[in-house]
Image (cartoon, rainbow, N blue to C red; front, side, top):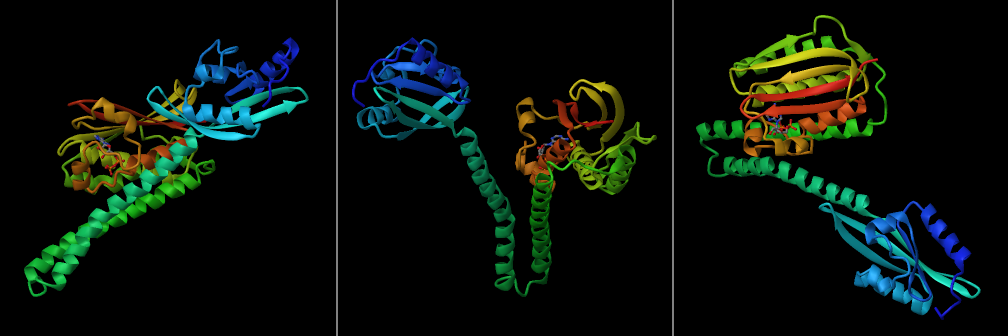
Length: 355
Ligand code: ADP
């Protein structure tokens, strides 16, 4: 880019306003290699008062500087990658540097395309595949090992055969539960934008879930108490999905609430619920377990996240239950709240819009 005429006041204002109108960070560098304009989003990245400074002192990363130098030298477009860390989060931009030449006037536009979310989604997908593979591989390895033993050294040992088949049965059922939960999760995700149409009575639904889980509770000496479920409370919802929400929450309360304790389920209606800013039905599922350390609470609904992996597996958990719960509640435009006090138990609250 040969030295060109400097921009006058009007041209500079036009470039500045143009940059300000764009919904992504943009810096404009003049042919004198000084910053001519910088919009608000770019100012947040590179600081205020950068206009008039040499671009090298503003955009310090070598790849970015090389790209702009190329444009200035060859008047050809160039691209670069720009990374920075902000509040502990790695941000990534594709930077497009392009020459703009009109008669005797020229400048370089440097536009930042935010790739952070795309990169994060890719990373999440990779992590998810790795997690699924890992979760399935453990029981699969056990099953394969026992098949080999049964076909070889233990083929004539009736006692061992019975024991090994018992373990294989348990491990195969675990794989089945994982695959079942993965399918539920993908179904819920596929329907996430479809509003539920059925009218259902949440109290009747909670009662029937409690009846269905009674044998599970009994096996651990746990009693389930219900409160506020006598009268009907109707709202628009997906029966199967809400059944799954309360099954998962009550089952967790039974599993992690400690043997011989009580699990209480309480339904209350609120004319003005602060989080939903409107009428809501609130279903609290409380247990008397050890509670959950506060640092784990925000992550409980992540797929495969467990506070204590060993305990979860021991209890037959897949680590997907609360992820499913969260997705179903989101589809119903509700909220999940978790409150827990160490040594006193946890309370999972489902808050659903109640019109
Ligand atoms: P899992 O199949 O492991 O139970 P979930 O997604 O249902 O998976 O729950 C994730 C984790 O949250 C569990 O592994 C457990 O550590 C913790 N958790 C869930 N519910 C409770 C509860 N009521 N009390 C204590 N911890 C709980």
